[in-house]
Image (cartoon, rainbow, N blue to C red; front, side, top):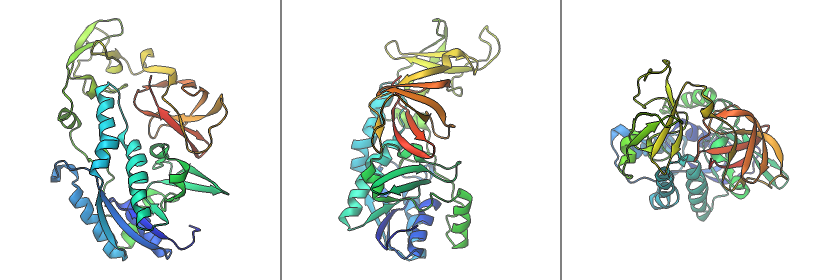
Length: 356
């Protein structure tokens, strides 16, 4: 990392990626501090990867590598800027991705502001992405490990946020990061990756959502209007979902599984179809809300690639207008509330929220 010696504050999650990021920066001679962010004031039991255990892991890493450790609470900001949106989206029948908004509003805004107040030159995280600096232009690039690239979750950052951020493990593979952590004696070298809601952790999602939103059960119908069963509430289902429908395979038809194909919000009806490749599960065009560009917006129409979900292979498409995207090939399970993220090669250009 070709960087003048700097004051850097690392967002420490208690996981192996941010731990190795802090270690690498310390080894490079920078003045490094670790910060643990607690952003959820809900229950804190052993069932849900509690923040107390993560904070203890982060503090132990900082002690081992010899950097100061601090913790801060952004719970109010998280509720106002992320969780309220999360609930509004589910209330509207959409499927949001809170990790994307969490990165934009908490990790790279609230945390960045806090770090600057402490006099830091940069913040750093354990994200698997790379930053490319060309003159005064700062671009976001995919991580070198294609299995761990996390640029999808950072498309909503702006260039100023990106310029003040560092990603020390972005050029490494996950295997290399774990091996390095074990070699330097980090006890969290084998700690599993977090897969829960950003800052909230892993828990039974339906039970958790029911604490905040009243469920409205309703009908499950085919596109032709045939009643097949009952759903527990539209917010519990996402487009393309197979598991959890609790429908037998036959229902008087050919034996094949059922999938969620759509939601009729006004009638509170879940639209379901049989067969993994049913035409109702595919769309060649989609619309978005306002698009966000990390750097300058390209002239439209614009040809590039895109992902409509994390870890999807890049799909060729044309952005025909600010709110309209056409794919070269039909895409399965286009989901309102999720994000479409654009790429040109390894460079992440930006993206937007899918509306339909």
